[in-house]
Length: 418
Image (cartoon, rainbow, N blue to C red; front, side, top):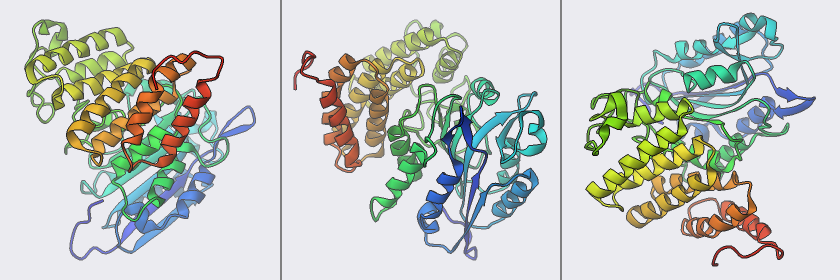
């Protein structure tokens, strides 16, 4: 967080619990439990500063105007601001997104839920760098197609957004504190030095056990709304992986730094410019093979131009890993993330956030492997990577080793060297 102004002395934390997510009479996401857990964390730790801070918990609200009043008051604070939202994301018949409140019904969404655009509207006037929105949501069947179409969850240009949105039908917390929020809190409590928000997000998302297809924020859509260099997420360890959508060299910082490879006509309308927005658009449209082929072509070109161990080459390996994750090819994604982490570890050291983010990406993708042979094949390499990063939560290593040991049942062949 960054503070601004010499006479502005207070921060603000606003915690909002929307409607619980219930499926077949089982609570899958309990926003009230998430709020209760976050409320136990000192506000100074949540904000990452020592300013006096006001904390407001809004749980069980039924009137969207009540929530709007709290948002407006929070947005007016002159100091740093954290807004946390948890619950069910829904949509009306026109495709507009809402945070469902207590008592929200499908037939009366427009009158009983909080329009998502209100959040951005209230935060739009705040200076960049002092506002963070943290979300832990589950989209229902009406909201999920809208999210897939827009590719993100927009707030406002000057706001940093971190969080996860799980697809409908997947449990996010089984009625207790959800995995993403729980791991965010646990990382805050781990040591005297508070990690940066991006590190907290990377570790929390990597350990949360998210379902396949979960939306991890920030995405390219959110990055395109930020005037400053974007902040990475665990699957895109550097903010330059997926730049703002645009076709020319001015669409993102250093966009034209990589010359076009031979055969650049495959890039269609972005030949000679930055190919990443086009590749990302292909992947989000479900054209995974095309996206992967283009990314591989650019990776080979960069390896030839800068060297196979160059930062540029590692970045393209990470892009390919993210594309594999988006396509559901978790064995490939795991291997690419492990390789990228090793390369970054060799060049950047054990304390670098990009090394930790690559490790988080590898860990997440490995946890999505369903085939025991795949678990055993890549498990030892992942264990070695995690063991080389002492600053990571030691439970990551213990749980990884335990799963690997369980997969190496006596009746199964030892598929890899140990």
